[in-house]
Image (cartoon, rainbow, N blue to C red; front, side):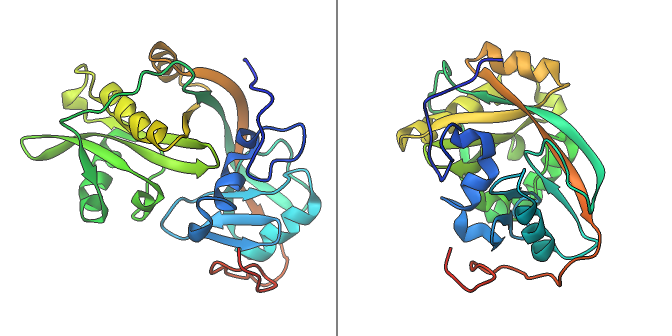
Length: 255
């Protein structure tokens, strides 16, 4: 897969791209107000997005900070991770593909409506019917979500998830089974991308590596596969008492 080079930001170390550790860049950047953090480990607050990240997944000290953050014996999803250190058990995992909107045509969708907290019950119903990926009762706080209704019923949706310096992830792309084949998802992706580009960001997204149909669809509308990464759900044995972040580090410093 092609690799983007020459772009850094969001605290990315020399020789890396900010997208290589997108969750960390979001949690320590534009989404810091939604983060819980201890040292070199961070995660989203309950109900927002059930995922954590490390400043450097190869650093044992970062894993120690993660144990302090989530507590002993607690399972947590972490990405990206190439190797899990001793003291952690992998419960399950998978591989994803990151794609960037290099040639995506962005345009508004006049029929789309902005979705907010009042729409969460209906959003969760659509998510349950379509299974686009993780979506919780506070996920709408991560960015702009747009939907299309038919006879008052929400039948399609797409929105913004991870936001990091210069980049915003498009996520929760789904269409009710009874309304597929009308191009609703594509129109919503283009509309969400319109808003992303209007503030100077570039859209990107993730798909399961084994979801060849979705990857082909995204490629057909202008996304380019960039890299593969592994996400794991791990459980830490023993460790320190959990320190629940509230916008400060364990040492009490502001994020």
